[in-house]
Image (cartoon, rainbow, N blue to C red; front, side, top):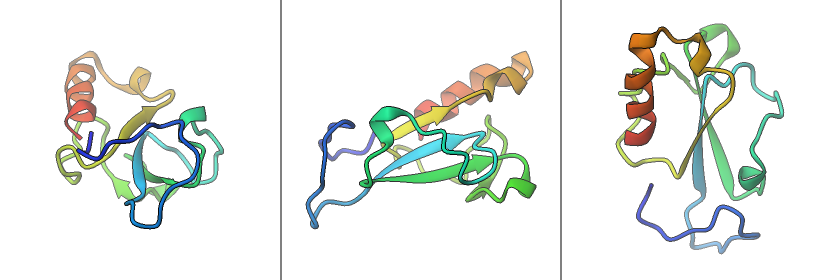
Length: 101
């Protein structure tokens, strides 16, 4: 997590505060509407990652290789129906990458 102090369920944000970023791993197509309740307020900016370039993610990358994303650069990581598409030898590296970012 970034060093700024925040509460994912807070409402509203000050103009001086940087927006919070959440990483959607295996995002699928934009506008799917799948967003966890704590990340629904407008202060949260979504960064979409998917291995399939046809869904037009912000970053094209497999779930277990997020080297395009700096360490501790997002405030939350979310993934829905992604990990079951990984082979066993990819699952643990993926989780490590999600924690790293």
